[in-house]
Image 1 (tube, one colour):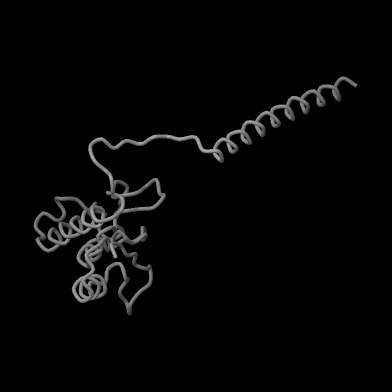
Image 2 (tube, rainbow, N blue to C red; image 1 turned 30 degrees about the horizontal axis):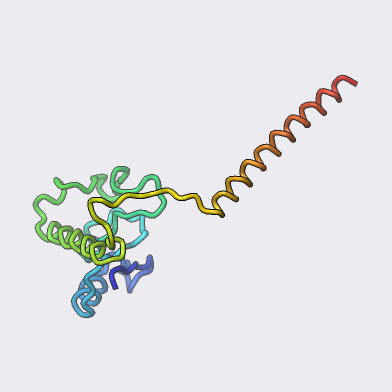
Length: 162
């Protein structure tokens, strides 16, 4: 297994995303998990240090949010953005962040995502039959909408002229 996602639940009074006992002691040390642990939690940035210390490797990964990452971060506790300066003298957090980066890279390197990827790889766009049907439906719907608008305007003008 290369990845796991934690829940937003709590074990006792500790959120799963910041439970060192769950993420590091049990998952990594006891069960031997070496992959990518992620959470979609996005409203508790004030526990960032606890989450990093717990061993969650993908806390800064957001799914589908435009305000992803720490650029828009504002801690409810101290108003300080997580940065290199904030953790410059905290060896433990630096080691945890280093391990998190290693786990992410390990999971990606071991996944199918890396199969057949080399310096000559490139993406190609192919028109499939269903995509062609979808585009045709879009065009027909657009022409029908335009025709309805023209007819509506003509009917409105005719009403005014009577």
